[in-house]
Amino acid sequence: MAQIAKQKQIGGDRQPPGPTGVAAAPSQQQLQPKQQPLQQITTPQPDIPRFYFPEGKPQDKDGLKKTEELIDKIFTEKIELKKEDFEQITTEVCGLPKFLKTLLFDRIDSGKTGKITKPAFTLFWKKDFQNIDASRRIFKIIAKPDADALTQEDFKPIMKILLETHPGLEFLQATPEFQDRYADTVVMRIFYKIDMNDDGRITYRDFKRSNLKDVLFNVAGEDDINKVREYFSYEHFYVLYCRFWELDTDHDFLIDKDDFSRYEGHALSRKAVERIFDQVPRKFKSGTKDKMGYEDFVWFMLSEEDKTSARSLRYWFTIIDLDNNEIITPHEMEHFYEEQVHRLEYLNHEQILFVDLLCQMNDMIKPAKEGHFHFHELKKFNAQIGIFFNCLVNLQKFIAFEGRDLFAIKHQLTEFPNYTEWDRFAKGEYERLAMEEENGEDSEMIDAMEGWDSDQDDQNREGGTAGAGGAAGAGAAAGGATGANPAGEGVAKTGAAAGQKQVLKAD
Ligand SMILES: [Ca+2]
Ligand SMILES: [Ca+2]
Ligand SMILES: [Ca+2]
Image 1 (cartoon, rainbow, N blue to C red):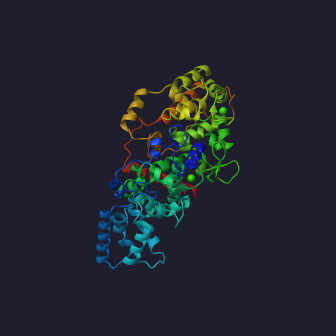
Image 2: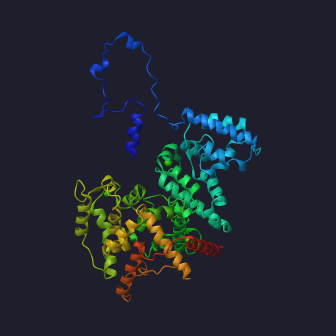
Image 3: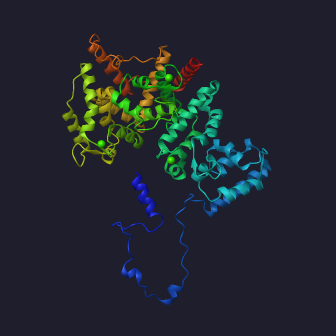
């Protein structure tokens, strides 16, 4: 990654390198002036249209004229616009999602007079907006004035507005703490996906390449927030938050290594948990030594439940790559697999020899050197790469993969073809939580592997029973096709009620 970025920098705005990597030398023919008739030389060159717009392609002349007419019309009907009159300017003139109305108004009305006149708007329009496209305008309005990147802080005003005005989030108004958690989670998800170098800043380049602009328009046009699966879904937030809540038993918003190891019924191996708590894949931002905060957990969970993303691949690759040389070797794989074998033994489960596993991985990925997996080689298989890591560090998912129901998997894929791995997981998990809530069950997990960490030699424990429980848990983790409860208004309300209950419990 760093190398690519560096290369691009070197390239800069100089001539791009030719196929051999050397700047393409002009040919002899190009160097020699062509003998052309005098008339042709003196003919003025036609206007070559500009084709590179770092600020986005502005409107053409016709479009600009129409916009100016619209501005005239709006300010003829009202001499001064107040905040509540500003929607048409926001959407039709500026081409922004409607919920940016307040931010746009405040940006123009910097003196806080509460009204905007035509000269004030026109001044802003000509200076700041006329010559840039919608994407750049949205970026400018979210960012602090003249800032070149977005920070998490910058999203707070938008989230506040959405929580106050979006019909799909109205039910949260009764529980302000939960509003904050939801807002934080949305922003964490945005940064997880878009802030690729994880420095807490989304540059315009990041923003433009991302889907955030389109998603913001979806949020503006869709009353059911759960249909906006990217970042904003309330259900997805609910699933993340509930998982954290289940682990954070004393509810101080921090989890230690023991809490964390109970994730999904002790699905993760101890060695993986150690690496995560050594903060190898990512430094914790909790600010408390040896404890994971909610944001750290969201990062982990998004990486754990959807291993198809570049971010997740990097997370797990770093965990397995013990010597940090960018290659996963058989020695490193076996270091982790060993523990899986012991746990399978403990559950009286059939074992797969490491050599066989390695063979399967070689067949799937076909690395240049057998058994040596480079990051870029794994990246090519991003859709299936989850199994590579699950075999090494996640017992439940490993078992689920072994006993997978190909028919059920196919059914899921055809039923929701546009869903990501995360979307599928979150849907199944939300339905499970909603049903638990409906049945009045306690949300505590049935923990098949409980006892493994503290007392793994306990011979009194019935391996058979634990094994069955483990498999059931794994089935639930694979989720989706089972427990088909039509997610709709009813379920969303149940979820909200559950959330409220949990918040109340926190106080
Ligand atoms: Ca960044
Ligand atoms: Ca805690
Ligand atoms: Ca290595």
